[in-house]
Length: 377
Length: 219
Image 1 (tube, rainbow over the protein chains, first blue to last red):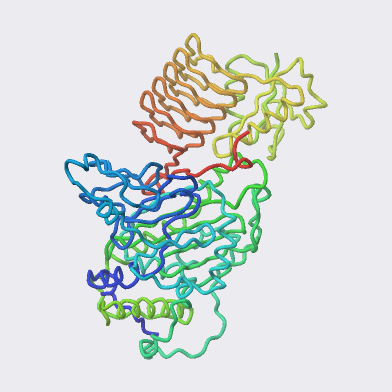
Image 2 (image 1 turned 180 degrees about the vertical axis):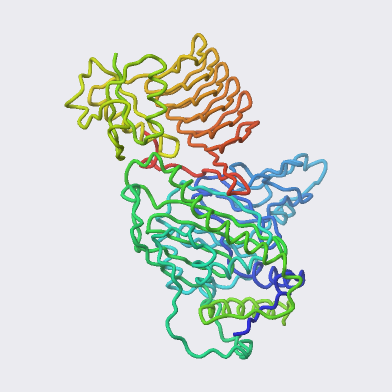
């Protein structure tokens, strides 16, 4: 099958801008977890669709806002994680738990803001939706219902499983030299595992791609003819890879979710790869687009909640993340090399039957970008 | 006092046995945990039931293990023998330089030509590798692993269960939070807030964040 995506779609600044507008500024994006914002005053900052964003626990309620002061646009929080009051480090403007401006040093003499004028200068707030312990943010003025983005059964599963995530986690970021779509296509592609990751994927996974008979494929067919039929809520998907003997001694110390003998992969459209391994450990990767050829992968690993003393959990998390990274490192190297050669590729890509979900992914990306007045090919 | 080594792998058994022999300590037996070695290759007779075979007043134990296994597991083994009434040795290579006022807790090992500055404090179950230098006033936490040829500056705090690969350098005054892992050859010039894991696999440090629940916290 011919691909909906052309090599240009992975290098073009116009396509990137259209995606930032049509996808990342419009949909619900995973921007944090409850554990990152557990206590009053705790915050997490990130860049979302090019905007500096902060999430903060404001008296128990998680609020998301533009991480800039309404005075001169200075950055409020410089660190990625931290805890503190909403006070601008530049001139000391302060904001309350509702993000309203409540303090301007020397206001009487220098600004003379009335109460009404103060009220107009609160921080720019964005919608937050908590799904279990996962925090989704939407930058749109009128956010679409999250149920349009994720099917009800998926939301229910995310809510039920994520509340079992432990409050301690290992976290890192990884700057990669490839387009974010390549990263997501890679996680939705089972065939590469037995080739690229031969020897590195833990051998207790059954990673053989489904090679059962499929309908004849017409490689001349143009899937673009009916790509608009794919609904947004259908493009996220969940798959279980059976595991053989993958039990660890520490598994007995934590609460177990369904799927004790499975590696559960979840793609949350557009850019999240959430894995639950053996019903005992969460691994979350967010592919955050920075530029057409740059993606920041935010990586988090956490076990399920401990049931008993689990003093060596830090080392378990570290070993898990290293294991993930050994596999992901091969993907990154391959995809960075792929990206580096894309400028010279002037032919269309070809998909096999196992990649139907990639075409759905492409179709929804294209659809959202064209709705947003972006680049349609 | 005779020594019995409780070992979980051949490499750390060899390390402990070599230091003990050089220090003139008589090795009376070996307890092998979770691995099998030809008896002929053991430096002392194999002891299968320490509780029944050993006289607690006549011997001391040393529980050995390498950095690839959890030092906390080594600690658990040590505590199990401690509860059974055993005492533990501190193994110090004869050519190690241990200044006045250095405090060494039980079940520690100080490797060949290692140097410990005045006032250094080494927690129980820690291992200081050969040629490593620990600065004046520095505290090495319980169950920490300091690799061969490391240099830990003066007045540093290395948290419990930290693992420093061979040749790591820590500038004076650095604080390393518990469970941090630094790879061989890494140089840390300043303290890092929170536990960090560094590895060439990653392009940025891995940080440990959030709160350990009561169940998950250390006792």
